[in-house]
Length: 478
Image 1 (cartoon, rainbow, N blue to C red):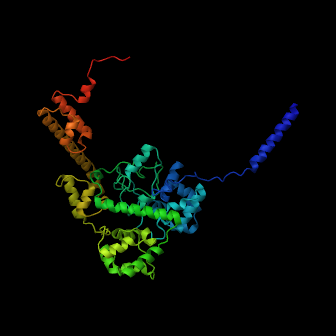
Image 2: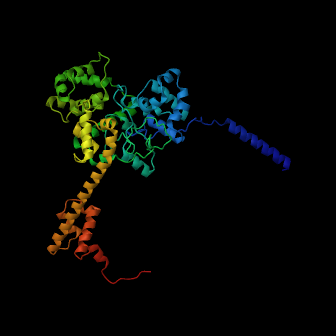
Image 3: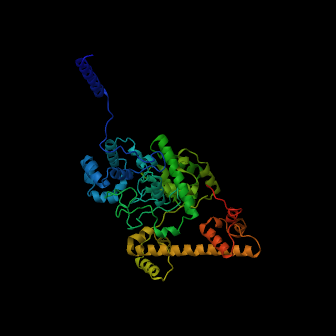
């Protein structure tokens, strides 16, 4: 083949390749990264506001700048006017993006177009609890579990904000059985809903410090058993609602009120359940009458169902056996969880007590214990007395460390006395002999083992494991 023929053949091949590329339909490109939401199929699915934050950080810009430059100009004029100041909206009002089905739908549509992610609508509340009123459903500011953040970072997982953490009714992490936090352990400030800074996931939106460390005063308190039972029930009920919503779409609550009304009417139990659950019988009539435009909140429904030992989904599907048994017995399996009363704070009394703790007039204690003693919420103390709270936190940590060292010293002394007791009776104080003399699990503690070794050396003995390794002549291995 001549050079002319080779050139002609190459040109024809190039044209065919060019035509093939032109005929190939390329997938549509998104303006922003096509960021996949985290855990979209589980109870730990990401929240929409958390997704917006993570989208901004993925582009190495502040999420608030992403909204200003890319999302806000695409909203219609009426929605832009409803946000008078974008900074205030991102700090205080953006939590509504996790609840809205109307105006919030515009944000979702824009984000789905920009990212080519078609399922962002499921990151909002309507696709979890259906059409219940959104009032008092979500927190005013984000909360988080520091143990989850640290665990995700250590394992190299994505750090994000689950929608479950935003529920006001959920106060304890179901994985780590610890209270959520709402304030940075370093600067003691609450987090902005949409971050104004180009920080990293899991960092404070104000001081950029890592949020995966627990507030010092919270190390002393664990949820009591009654609270844990309630919180376990809440999480299980929420998971049941989520599974049902994933199976049939957004929940419709009409069957719930219809079946509940039929049961109450047949059993003539309005007054009885009103007394047992703490829900006024007139209010129960309003729940099921359908005549008034009134729907109870998720919190009220959960507290009623918890006291009756029945889940909302069971009532929706007409599984009323547990409810009928409660009505017949006239007693509750669970104590009804009554809403917390809002007390007006006595600032003088609170400040005097905080000062007494700082001055040594009261015993050192954590802020949660102080709030419980005074009868107020922890957030109220942080809000009204930020300086005193910031000073009490390190004192509480120091007191906690002192108590820990005292407890370990008691452990060491108990082990030492047990070793001396066995030795005085002519018994070699091995771990096997020590365990029956000590509380369960003592000898698994490194401090107890150190005390055991130290006492053996004091007596001129050595652990049997070391004695066995010295049996026989020493040999050199090559």
